[in-house]
Image (cartoon, rainbow, N blue to C red; front, side, top):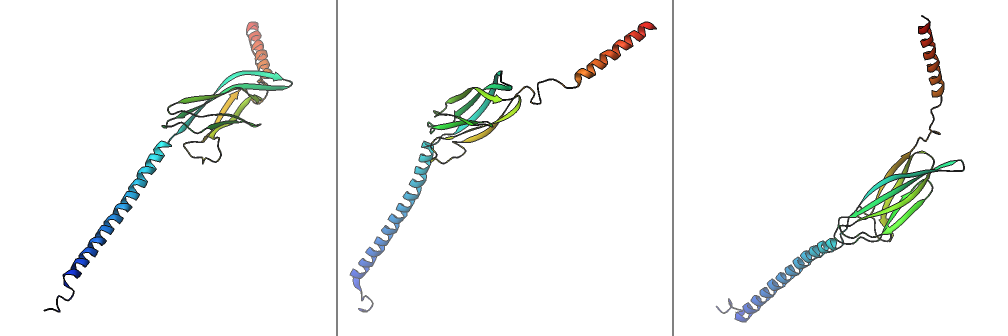
Length: 194
């Protein structure tokens, strides 16, 4: 009988203690992993929420005047670029760009949460009559900030004044009008003679 209980009560106690330590260790490891996982997700969500701003853009134009300089006709427009921040924090510093055939024009500013801010390019000159397409964009001023749909955008604005094919006259129309008037006069005289 003695051979059966060779290890004795002390051995069984040590085995129980070792098993208990293993369970405690596994439980602590599980808690640490879950805490790290959930806190990482919570912190990411909070960080994203804290850094959330979303800019949208609306663009419009208004004809101002035309001016002849030398032999060229210059057309002037007021171009309004409106940014709206639908997020919950102030935007980074934003650069608004207006681009035509000749060059780029810029304005800078930031937009508060819920704020609508309008950048106006007053009396923007364009050479010649007709239809023109302008490029309008906005992006972070700091080029190290990655651009995304929330902080940058682009659209094309089409402006038009007058006819781009000349001075506004209709060539050949005068001749046709004159011929119609002569035919009408001839028809009226012929009826009077009858």
